[in-house]
Every structure is written in structure tokens, then in C-alpha cells.
Length: 106
Picture 1 (cartoon, rainbow, N blue to C red):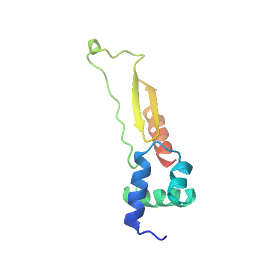
Picture 2: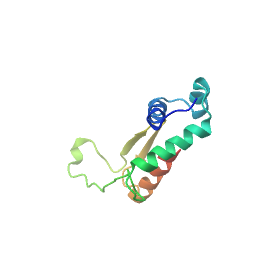
Picture 3: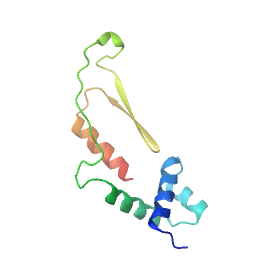
Picture 4: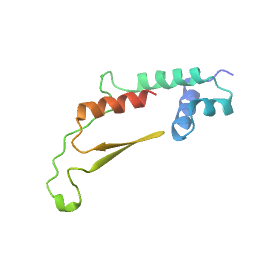
């Protein structure tokens, strides 16, 4: 069955809302995993600005009021489809940005 770009966008969006592995999602819909991965890449490639760090914006933050419960050993939660990452406060933001960008590609 041939799908339009809009139909593939809907399939990719449905996949990204689930926590299923690619193979399981595709198996129940009769889609080749490689095809879904290609369309996901294709749609992202045309949707994001032409920048190497597209979609990932991190800023350094200085905590002023430590009485709010933040400590030097605190962690930040980054939630992506299918994965949650706990990052220690103070971790290099360039590393975190690269990690998030790489995880978004999978």
C-alpha cells in the first residue's frame, strides 16, 4: 500500500506517541521497520532548520536560592519518546546536547 507524505507523517507521529519498539509497532501495521525509520528521518530532515544543533537548545543555569531544594548533587530529568535521562546538575551542556540529539535520531 502506497502512502502519501501526510499519511507517513501520521504514522510516524503515532509511533512517537507509543513506547513500542520499532519492530513491534511495524509488525502490527504491516510496515517494514526500515521504511518507517527512513520516513521518520526524511520528515525530520525537512521539518528542522538546517543547523547542526537543530531542536536542541540548552542554557547554563545558576541556582540562586538553594533553599528551594536544589543541591549540587541534584539531577535534571530529560524525557524523550521511549527514554528518560537523569543528568547531574553541572554536567557539560555540550555533552548533554549531543546526547539528546543522538537519542532523537534513534
